[in-house]
Amino acid sequence: MIVFWPRRGVAAWLVGLARLTQRARSEDALKRMLDAEYSGRVCTPESLAGVLQMKRSRTVRHVARLEALGLVLTKRDGLMLTDLGRGEALRVLRSHRLWERY
Image 1: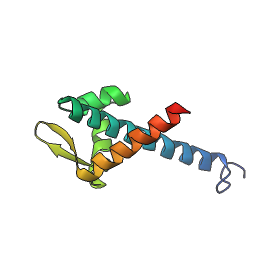
Image 2: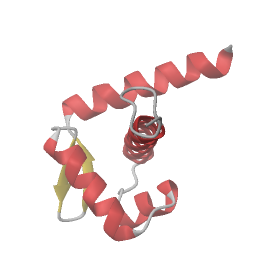
Image 3: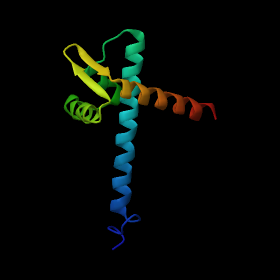
Image 4: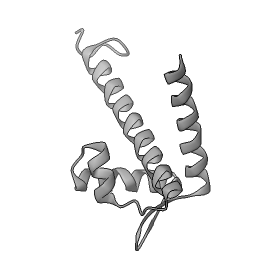
C-alpha cells in the first residue's frame, strides 16, 4: 500500500512532518530562553507555552525532553539554559539570521 510505503508513503510523510514540528518548537524554545536570559527576565513553562502556542502540560513534556538532552535546567524560579543549550540556541539564532538575510 502507498500509505505505509517506507520513506515515501503517507505515514512516513506524517512522521517526518512531526519531527520537523518538534525540531522547530525546540529551536523556538531555545531562542526564547536565550532572549529571556539576555534581557534579564525569568523564563517559565507558562511563558514558553504562550510563545510556542502549546498547552502548559505539553510544554512541560517538551521542556523535559530538552532537559534530558542536557540543554535546559529546571530551577525553582524558572528555566535556564545549560552551556550546551546556550551554544545550541546561539547556533539556531545565527542560522535563522542567515536564512532571513537571503
